[in-house]
Image (cartoon, rainbow, N blue to C red; front, side, top):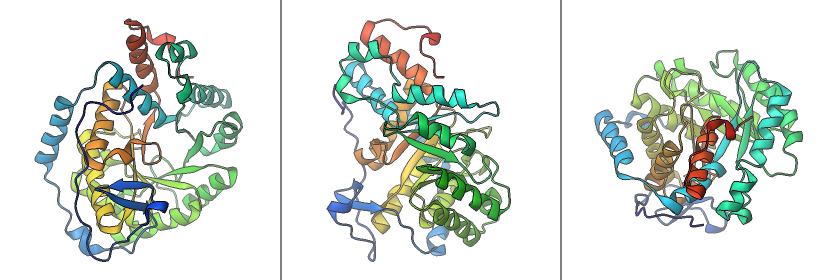
Length: 351
C-alpha cells in the first residue's frame, strides 16, 4: 500500500534567525526545509514577537478554501491516506455518561480500528493499524491503561478543569499531577481564555509553564479553544505563547465550543508552528479536534499539514485528530475501496 500520493506540496523553506537552536540530526524529531528539529523545551516569553503577529483573515480563508478545492486523493492513494489518518487518531470519549465499560469498548476498537476481514481485503495485515491514543477523563485513566496494556497505544487525559478551565490554578495543576501519577502518557490542558482577551501574555505563559512542569515526562497538548477566541490573531498569539511556554502540541478545540476545528484556524496554527520552528529549531505538534467527522475532512487536514509543514507532521508523533465519529466514516470509505460498495453505518460501531 503506498504511503505517499500524487500531491507535490512541500513545506516552505526559510532560514532561521540568528540565535536559534541548531539541533543534531541524531536527536531530531522532525525535518523542516532540510533542517533537523529538536523536541520543544520552550523559550522565555518574547513580547516583541507577539506584537509582530499579524493575520490577514481574508487571505487565510481564501487559502483554506483553495486547499479543499485543489487537493483530492483517489483509489489506493486515498486508502493509504485514510489508514494514515487512523494512525494519527486520538479516539475520544468525553461524555457525562461515560462508564468503565464504554471506555473498555473504545480501547478494544483502538486496538483493532478496522475490521479484520477488511484488513485482509486491503492486504495491510503487516501494517498493524491502530490509533495513536485513547483520550478520556481522569477517572478512566486506570481503566484505559489496563485495557490497552501491551498495545503501544497511549492514554491521554483531559485536565485543568476541562472544558472551561476556570477552576483555581492550584486545583488544575493538582489534577494534572494526579493523571500523571495514574499513568497517563499525555495530558490535554485548557487555557484561561480571558488571559488572551486581556492581552495578559505573561500570565498565560506562566499558567502554561506551570502545567508543563506538572506534566513531567508526559506530553502536554495545549487546547486553545479557538472557537472562543473570536479572532484569528488571538489564535495566532495564543499559539505562540503556548509554544514558548513548552507545549508539545497545540490543539484547536475542546470539542465543546459552538465552533471547533476549522481549516482557517488550522492554517494559522500550522504557520505559527512553522515560524516557531524556523526561529528556535524546535518542533511542536498539532492536534485538530472537534467537528471532524468525514474521511474527506481527514485527508484535507493531512494535505494541509504536508503543504504547510512537510511530511514530518504526517505522523502521530506530531499530528493528531481528536475524534469519535470520524473512524466510522473512514471504515466505510475503506470498505468501498475494497468492495466497491458502501456499507451501513451500523456495521462499523465505535463503542
